[in-house]
Image (cartoon, rainbow, N blue to C red; front, side, top):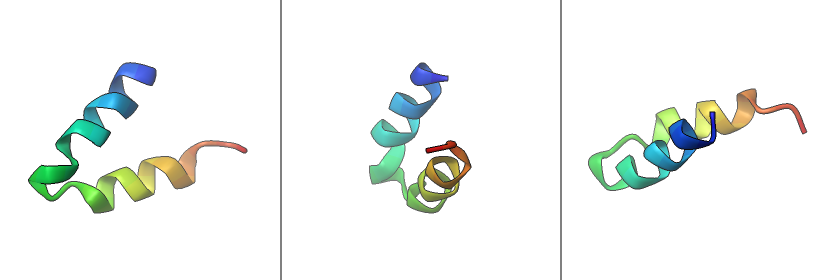
Length: 29
């Protein structure tokens, strides 16, 4: 999971900001 999160953060420049936001919203706080 953590690797996937880091990957999304690294891919933010590729325009995956929406995916990153959705992924963060799915994380139980």
